[in-house]
Length: 164
Image 1 (cartoon, rainbow, N blue to C red):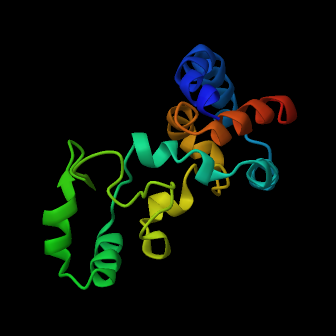
Image 2 (tube, rainbow, N blue to C red):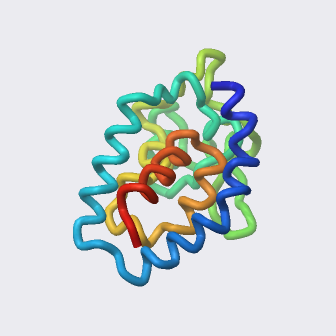
């Protein structure tokens, strides 16, 4: 896994133009059953992928925290939302709440999430490869293939199974 993870940014960069062209075509004419096909590709990949062996998303990128996330996690810590914000978050250039630092504060040494049951929506849904109307998140997917080995493999499989 470590070897693949270290090669992933370059692999993603090498495939970027090919993937961008593919997603541009997919956006123009998505297959009617795209969501079902993506769900199958996602499910197949995550039968083989153990996120606990990787946790690259938690180590290299931070999620966006919605107000609902902040309230839920603050309650978990028995804090007021503003206390949680002050302790763990900052506002980024897009005016979104994000972590103050990486790797994620809530990632333990064994790659377990210490707030797994109340984790942010962005974490629950990552890498978003089973999302409805998948073609609408092409730009996000292009970024995620450089972070998530499963997302990279799903996109490679997609190009084989879903011609555009």
